[in-house]
Every structure is written in structure tokens, then in C-alpha cells.
Length: 269
Ligand SMILES: C[S@@+](CC[C@H](N)C(=O)[O-])C[C@H]1O[C@@H](n2cnc3c(N)ncnc32)[C@H](O)[C@@H]1O
Image (cartoon, rainbow, N blue to C red):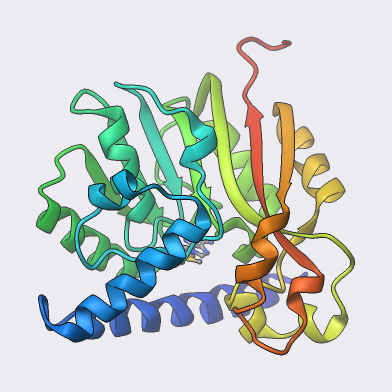
């Protein structure tokens, strides 16, 4: 793919999520009224389909949304005092859940390339009084994070959107401490995507067209340097993926998966 094609994908994705951030702010411009409760009830139902508990939902400020396809925290086993990095943090949902787990001595950093999402996440953090979470504007291919600074990288339905997934995993490896780990939820292709889906920019922005086959994903993780790689397909995700583009049949091609890997402690592990 040329640099120009990369830029076109990135621009489409950014516009798509900027408009979602703007409309979610509008939806909840009326806190405490019935329109807000309807939105938040819908989101709660979706979040529990993804695997979040009632406790997780209590941890996030009102008005936070999840646009994810799984629950990376269920596999991340985040501990008190850890530094967590969320790739493509959106409105901050996973950062707020992780903030409770790392506690006041830990830290959560969310990175997103869409200024409107960063603004919404910062506003949510302010509303919720979070002191151990910060949001940084940037691309996950070129993380605004120093080398070997992070214990755990989480991400929820984002890396499929990147036109350069090899670079995302290389940079994730760079910022992890030795022994640090990846715990990612993302869509994967369970059979080859038809070109009508692969080349549809709207489906790309909607997390359908950019999914990698499992074998290719494992190869990319390996060449980035990760060990202990696992990709676990969540069969039950078929039900909600079917609702993303009704009638398109994408649920025949995609599943959500839990993706894990570790940065070796030394040169060899
Ligand atoms: C499907 S949403 C998921 C948001 C969040 N993880 C969640 O679960 O609600 C994708 C998010 O990733 C961001 N994003 C997409 N590609 C990105 C990239 N290359 N670099 C940084 N952020 C990116 C978008 O701006 C958007 O906020």
C-alpha cells in the first residue's frame, strides 16, 4: 500500500470517529434526562455483551461510551501500581476501568489520533475526578511514549483500523518494559474477506475491512519480537458483529479475539 493510500485510510477513520465523538456529546448534552438514560442503557447492554461487569460500568463516568469489540482487561490481569497504555483510547472507557485496577500509585495513558475523542476523554476524566489517567493525542504507529515505560498495553478494536499494523506492534514492543505484556481485543478474519468488503472505506472505518487473518497476525507479533503469543477467538462475538452492518454478512467473516503476547525479559527467553 502506498503512503497516499495509508493517509486516505487514516483520514477516513479520523473523520468517522470525530463525528461519533461529536454526536455522543450531543446525545448527552442533556444529563439526567430520558434521552441520556436511553443512550446509556443501550451502551450498558452492549458493554455487558462485550464482557464488562456491573462493577466495571460503575467505574466509568456517565457519558463514557465503548466502541470496542471485547474486554481486554479480562485477560490483562492488571495489578496495583502498574503503568497501562491504551492504544486508541476513544472516549476513555477502558482507561477508566484500568484506573481503578492500577490504583493511585499506578498510571493509565490513553493515546488516540482523533482530537475530538481526546477532548471527550479528558472531559470524562474531569467529570469522574480521575487523577491517575492522562490522554495524549497521537498515532499508535508512532506512540508519544518513551522506550520501556509501560507494564501492560491494552487496546479495544483499534489495530484493525491501522493501515500499518506491523509498525503498531513494533512501536508497542518499543514502549513495553522487558517482561511487559500485550492484552488486546480486536477483530480477526476467520476466512478471506471478499474484495467488496476489503475495499469499502466505510467498512474499514467501522472495524470490518481491516481485520487480519489469525496466522498473519501471529507472524506480525513474532517478527515484532513478542513471545508467548496467543490469539483466542471469541465465537460468541458473532451475535453483536452481525449488528454492525446489518444484512452485509460480515459475521460470516469476522470474530472478536483476545490477543496476548509478552516482551522477553532479556535478549532471549
Ligand atoms: C473503534 S474505536 C475504539 C475506541 C475505544 N478503544 C473503545 O473501546 O471505546 C477506535 C478508536 O481508535 C482511534 N484510532 C484509530 N486509528 C488510530 C491510529 N492509527 N492511531 C491512534 N488512534 C487511532 C480512533 O480515533 C477511535 O477513537
